[in-house]
Amino acid sequence: MTVCLFDDAPVAHLAPLTRTRAAFDLRVGAWTLAERAVAMLSPDRLAVHTRASVLGVTREEHPEAVRLGDVTGPVLLVNGRWRISSDAASVLRDATPSGPIAWVQGDDCLALWLPEAPDEIAIPADAARIAMEGETVVSRLWHLLDAVGERVAEDLRAMGSLGEHADADVQTGAILAHPEAIHLAPGATVRPGAVLNAASGPIRLEAGATVEENAVVRGPVWLGPGAVVKAGARVDASAIGERAKVGGEVHASIVHSLSNKGHDGYLGNSYLGRWCNLGADTNTSNLRNDYGSVSLWDPVEAAFVPTDRQFLGLVMGDHSKCAIDTQFNTGTVVGVSCNLFGAGFHDRHVRDFSWGTPDAYHEYRPDKALRVAEAVMARRNRTVTEAVRERLLAIHTAR
Image (cartoon, rainbow, N blue to C red; front, side, top):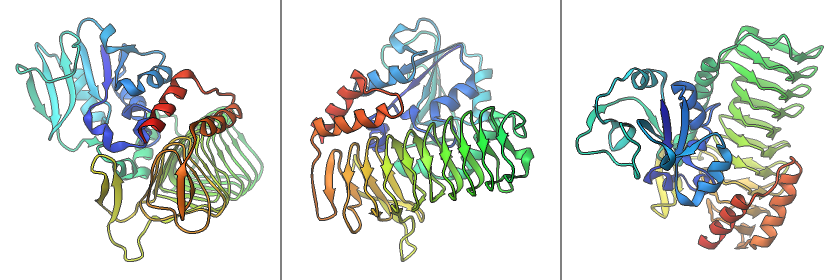
């Protein structure tokens, strides 16, 4: 079976995170949406269909995938914003269609089976429509941060191998509480005094992940390959992606990958993209003083909109940085390639390529921003590819 992940119009609401990637490359729980779809559906071949603006970076992210235009014969098109459940995946795998079928939830087309790959994605007039209910579809930024711990736990159970840690380096004085719910991959390290407590949910450390001295990790938590929890840190109900580093306190948050929050400070109910860096003692508020519903900037509405969520912190786009002692108010959205510093709370919406303090923001020159990106990525033996360079320059042009 060929499965094609596709972007649709509502991905625009997920900016700034979808300005640098396809929606299906967003991490929602321990897996990205694409990783979960592949794990649930086990396709023979993967195809991708996304916006022209991010096609280059998406093809770099998925070198194994083909373009929809290269697919012949039957194809199962899967909405990239859908966090597919195991039950729904079973329905799709077991389907024996004789003609076009669309699985829908409300206004969203979740999946579409066609006997021949189309040029453009649309539900044919003769397609049978099957309603699904209770599925998670990411349509707004705050949907990424709903039930983070529960989603991490669900993903870790689906990954399996809980209770395996014989080939990891668990050093003298480290504590594994409820080890049957902990997976430590070969090459993972738990240093003296560190506590991994899976009483509230599973914990998984991928190869090369490290929990340093006296850190406390309370499940559900996923640490991606090479991720580091710094000495004395406290992490719970979170997903920390590949080669990310976190210190201080991290709660109910997603650090997509390759970003740093290496020092003290609080990150709660927040989402960091790639190549972000939070300076020492950066703090995010995730609860209003009046305990009211948090509003969040929506790029399509060009306004703050209600979320009906009480807990919501920071959403930060790729390649953004902030200095020591930075403060972010409840429900703040920072765009791509921002460089923020200075005393006081920053604006709750900071546009792409902004440089400055809460008192004054200026255009962050793209030549300077790209030099920083090159330096940061070189530290992880990565380079700014031509596709990434073009995407960042296009985002600057459109700011």
